[in-house]
Amino acid sequence: MIRLLRFPTMTLLAGAILAGSAAQAADFVVKATTIPEMKAVFGQVESRIVVPARARIGGSIRELRISQGDEVKEGQAIAVVVDDKLALQLNAANAKIEALNSQLENARVQLERAQQLRISGSGTQANLDQAKMQFDVATNQVAAAKADKTVIEQSAREGTVFAPATGRVLTVPVTLGSVILPGEEIARIAPGPYYLRLSLPERHAAEIEQGSDVLVGERGLARAPSQLPTAHRGKIVKVYPEITDGRVIADVEVDGIGDYFVNERTLVSIPVGKRTVLAVPPEAIRTLHGVDYVRVITATGDMDVAVILGESVNENGQARIEILTGLHVGDRVVLP
Image 1: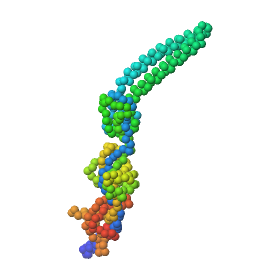
Image 2: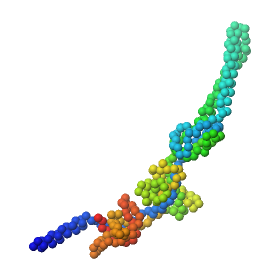
Image 3: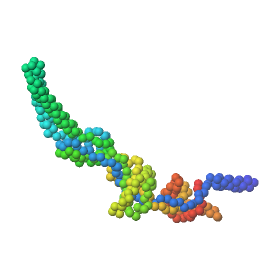
Image 4: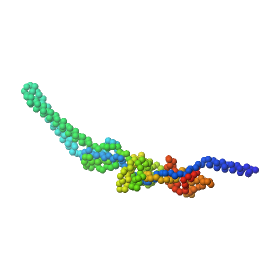
């Protein structure tokens, strides 16, 4: 009697489990999806602006406070250029001012004496006018000498070379003690913004569109960006209309490349066309003994179908796995 009651009980439990599984399972209808065809190319980091820091006077470099790769702030003193002749010219200017001051003092005494003689009636108006003229000439000579001294002092102050912008020092083509001319470069500074310069084969010129999204890999050239989980996303901001040496040039803006070296290369995946694929959610794929399977709903029941997987794709913001063979449009895939 106990056996007669056990079998119906087990049958009911099995039916409940199957019903629960059917309630938890869902199906996914396979359909064709158009995705961009990506091509991995090398992008070179460049700075939109490169500013030279130039010397304003000629002379020898007495101090050099930067080297390649340093970060500098705008207005920071990066070098000091000294011209030994300026010190001699300054001494000569001081001596000239002292001599002219003596002449000015003498002219003042002569003017005061001529004024007193004119008041007393002993002197003539012509002598007074001549003394006044000599005093004015001496005064102007002192003023001119002081202006010349100011020019020399300003030239000496211009020996300090300041950074023209905030950025990274790319090159320093001089060394301590080098003799330079006015206007010669002391350093080249890249203030940014930084971008990627791409050079693509001419056959892709028609497929490259301004505004397209690209995938930029992390630093290093070993792996493609699609294999990097932390790759950056960028956008093509300019496609140059001229083809040079069979290459089309495009610029890509992307956040997070400010710490890259200028002219450093990195891998970039760029869309060069479109293709149609069949893709399913990742949870629909089971791997057994090294073979990938997808469970498909057929007229006779569920059936496991062996498939060959492609790359990961994005369909309307959802992660999908490309299926190369094994599925057809309209197949219903069982999802857990």
